[in-house]
Image 1: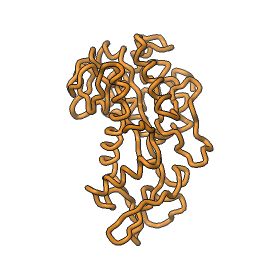
Image 2 (image 1 turned 45 degrees about the vertical axis):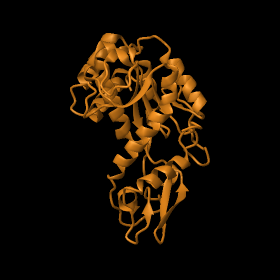
Image 3 (image 1 turned 180 degrees about the vertical axis):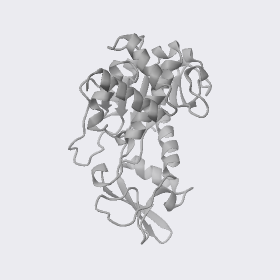
Image 4 (image 1 turned 45 degrees about the horizontal axis):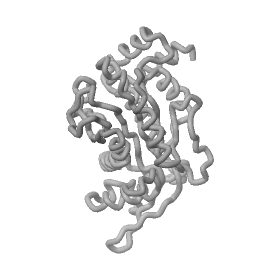
Amino acid sequence: MADKSLWTKEQEIDFFTKSLEVASPEQLFYTTKDKNYYAYWPKSYKGAKTTLQSRNAFIGAYTEKWTLEILKDVAKELKAYAVRNMVCEELELSKGSPADVAICKTDSVIQKPENILAIFEVKMSVVWNWELLKNNSKFSLKCLGDFKTHQGNPGLLRSDSMLKAIGKSITVRISSLESAKIPIIVLGNTPVMRSYYSKVDNLKNYGIIQGFWSLNPAPLDNNGENVKATKKKGFMRFDSYFDFKTQLLGLLKEDMMFFAGMKPKKELGKFIEIANKEDTYEKKGEKFLNMMRESNGK
């Protein structure tokens, strides 16, 4: 990744092109009765619909590897390493549920808390809608529009993705006192939903997640509602690799306890402890946000 560009349509073309070498179109696209292939159902589509679960594993692996490459230069400046699927038992990051990517002082997959400089959860997806066109044995891709034109909720626009990221971060924060010094950043390639603006700002204020950051400068073709940042910068969109790198290095060079926040620590600790009793990341995230809302009288 010599030019270190952020997420663009070209990245999605690259994803589909590489994935089609090992997967069938039916594993990557929604398929109509008359064999039209769409990345998402267009908003205008009224026909019978099928479900598509198989693409998740492909796009998950692709975006994690892409993020790993993006982070390598930052890690190098810190004389550290970008590590994928990082495991740290002390932080409840197991082989079954590792950190997607982390920056660490050593290049081992198994880490101790004191060697972890940052943890990244990757919540990226296919953003634009694409039609796969077949000409004999050759494929080509036609962009049909941005996420406003299709029926999907990609990346950080998916509520379940947001809740899972929040729940997993809560698990890490409650696991060990050593987690308090490690920033947790959720990386996406879309904006967040408007209903999450205050939530992401609160999560940043409380020190649980240091930011939901979008690495897609222009997810909307007309740039209409392409929010740059929420009021307290719980969500931020980066328009260049330089901006992203500068922000991240600034955060990683600070020596601070992240997990503190504006709420009294005792109250915050109680909320996290209760939320952590739920059995999935999604339920933990939902429980925590509900308690925060009730506490704030909203």
